[in-house]
Image 1 (tube, helix red, strand yellow):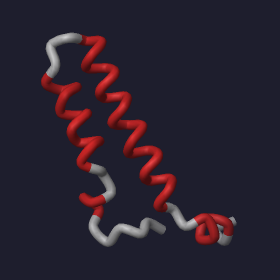
Image 2: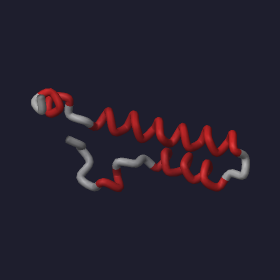
Image 3: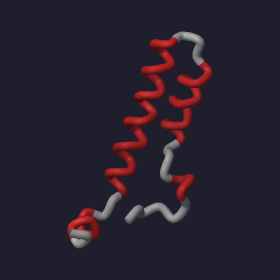
Amino acid sequence: MYTSSAPNQAISPGARAYARIGIESAEILVEGNAISKAINIVDNGLKASLDATDLSTRG
């Protein structure tokens, strides 16, 4: 279960900024690195917001 009540709050402003840099960049390396950073921020943020006890009861 996520602790955030609104789904759009699950993505941090930092992740959005990195994703925007990646999408708008003309350089493939910069684009890939920025998008990877955004994915990492989202992934780590979502994992941190999970309730581990809720997951253990799902079996």
